[in-house]
Image (cartoon, rainbow, N blue to C red; front, side, top):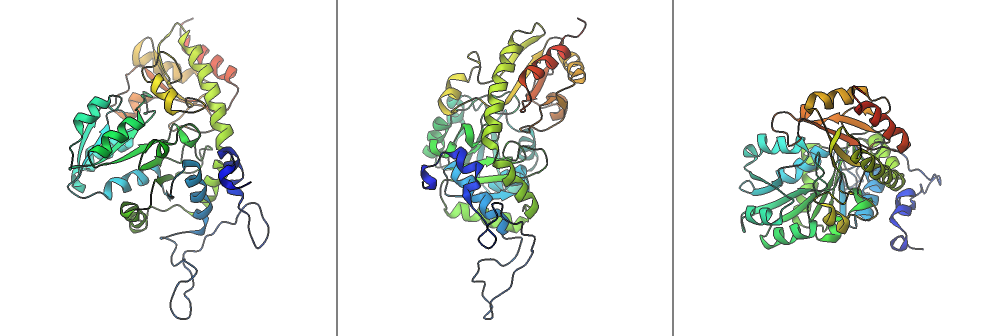
Length: 382
């Protein structure tokens, strides 16, 4: 069977089936070299010159991600922030960009604090509304429409195909932060997006031991060439061992995400019935405002991320988080362990997270244990 005829889960599990030609090893070696020999005539016919520009340990990883996303090429970066910032920093200095009001707080903060310094004008809108996106773009001036779906920490949903139409009509690129969805659930390029970004620290790696980011493009055009140059020029590169760990994590991506999706839906339904929970924010619930769009563009599940709002405000939410035993109180998401966090106190005054919100990242533990732990933690005073 050819690679094109294999299920993506098979491609991920076997990491495209690459093996080491010299030893037959089913896991390729980690390359730590920082520099490479020139040929006698001063050329680099083997394609490598210096470690900052490239690393052989990236090859299999980037090829696998490209296959899973259905793209033309991929790049790995030192972090998700480095990958996202490279996109904005590669735009023309007079560019206008549109971004969601609800998005990863680190990138939102970077845009608010540093966009002007890079000559960019950023407009933040309700990205769940195509009308709001349409009003925000400026044909001929807007160069990038950036969306995140489902969007952290409210898990709101943006219609990718609809956003693509708006961006392209205005002459802009459409980039999608698909960290929470992963290529297991959503393939934005197939819906017309130009770029996909992942904080690979999260689900792609899945073991809370690597910080990394990725970009995948629909085509290798002039803007992609600028991104390749930006990674090397800024030094936002991933170490060889970190690349190995990320690839190792991606080989279990499908079973991890599928397990998290099943457990998250079970936990979300259980939390709906808890008397101390006033709202459950999860796209898999029919009552979620983005459920219909999510059902269209998310295949096989709705992700492992949700948030719950707790009766009693911030104090009650923080106390509940302090009482968990199975869930871990920690920042991040997408690991094999389940995490809980009071998000508003992390993001600060301009956070879109209500003060009573707890963000939950569902791991691969037994869902019954996770529900029981939450029930006990939320039952304050009972």
